[in-house]
Image 1 (cartoon, rainbow, N blue to C red):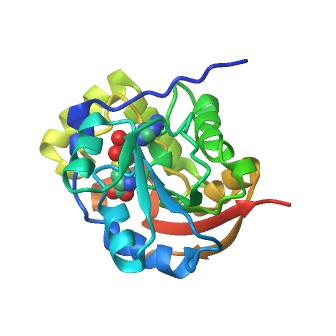
Image 2 (cartoon, helix red, strand yellow):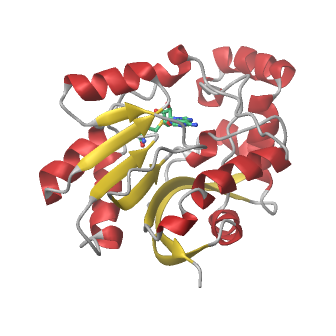
Length: 241
Ligand SMILES: C[S@@+](CC[C@H](N)C(=O)[O-])C[C@H]1O[C@@H](n2cnc3c(N)ncnc32)[C@H](O)[C@@H]1O
């Protein structure tokens, strides 16, 4: 059996995610796609960071929530605001049997390994871990559409996962801030809408409903990466029959 090892961000790199910039859209999409839940239980937010999504879901719908994150500082910040949380790995998630919905908000693209195939394996594995639990999965993910096939996501992964290319890109970013990324040297794997759907199917899930997000501004230097559109889409996944 191949053991796929995730290339992980440092705590300083993760600290850049301690904000609630995308939570409003995530909760709006969760409301539209995932509620009302089929049964009583906990909304588990995998890679839930400092707990803003879980906190708002609890405040808005009254559902019990739990954040699972690998970053001890994120979990400490959840606890400090009384958001139930636990340290845990998306690739080997803790099951309690009380889950009514499992959420992956902007985490799948961080499950990267040393090459494309293993990266795909990690992203599929994180979803497949929930396949036999019959739990709906809510996904909010970055979508990168390209002018040429699905090249942009691959190019960004190639640059951010290579130490040499990341060093060159970080140098260029000193003069062109739009090129900056906190994933340099580790990797990040964005995908097109169609690629994510394909990956979900491979993990054994069907997208029951989809919400396509608004196009974000693509700064001119990013067009060098052949990026046509950037947005955040949401999906509700159910085990495929
Ligand atoms: C981009 S942040 C997203 C935070 C939050 N969900 C949001 O949408 O703003 C990615 C989060 O995933 C967590 N993470 C990355 N890999 C993980 C893993 N294997 N298991 C659990 N958490 C992980 C990071 O610690 C970080 O909190």
